Image 1 (cartoon, rainbow, N blue to C red):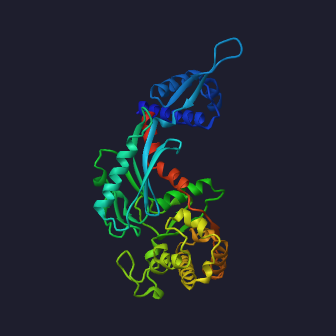
Image 2 (image 1 turned 90 degrees about the vertical axis):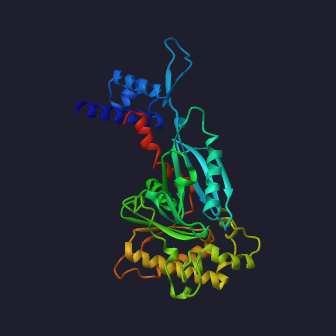
Image 3 (image 1 turned 120 degrees about the vertical axis):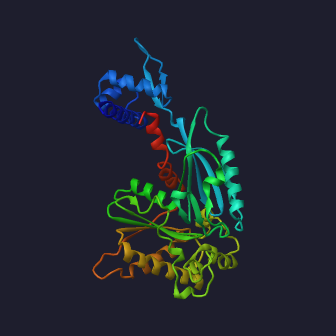
Length: 386
């Protein structure tokens, strides 16, 4: 029992040492002992173990004066990496990501809208094979992270449905890869929201993140922690059924879903008919839509009213303090102003303050930072002896 407590203490101290080196608050054994109020011998022993594990490197710095040259300690961010899968419109991206959250290598492939399970599995396998050929020298692959959109059974690694590829249903990620590696499946919005709140000045209370793009969905966090993060199911409001959409067939197979009148996959034919120059890529759309007269189109006004109504109803259920909104559409200042006007004119509940509305550009970087926490920190602790 005493040995177990001592081992746990040692691992915790190593983590403190590693974090201090990473932050730049100390670059030598002497500085570490002072910064962490530790005995020099303790620091030296633990640093030696971390050097042996290749988590920390020692670099001899040239000295301009007399005496022994200084030995600087630097973290080896590439000691552990993960392969992270993300989505951008109908493109699947596989990135080799290190402990710092830096992308070491990335490859991508556009997946046809008609892709079924076999086609998607083949794409995933191809991207994995490509990415694993570009691991940093001596790096350990800690596992695979799939940060995706849609409905999933995260514990079973099953991607149930995604609006962008309606013919793909119940795809088992592990069977697609067929490797003995740790794998996790998470919703991309949960990971972005988690990281966004960590960088926010306030994460108290409830926070709702609405993404309005090819699909329409939300993530909800209470006190900074996403709800149902480990299940992969929350806030698929795009498939809430509306009277105004009655009879319209959705890519999910049902009729009357919000997405049939408001998702980009439904709006794109009308948008491209009026504005032939715009693309199908969400990133590019944000710039392309910025100066267009979207509100002159009845379809866009109807879509806006529908999204506002459903978002307000969700607010009546979870009562968030703030609502982040990300969408290529709100990059258009007139459209965003109308969104604000309509939302603020909607009474959530008499006497209850309307949530703060915040424009939030879709961030793949924040999503990446949130997603790598599902595997890399745990493996890092294991390398330290935990």
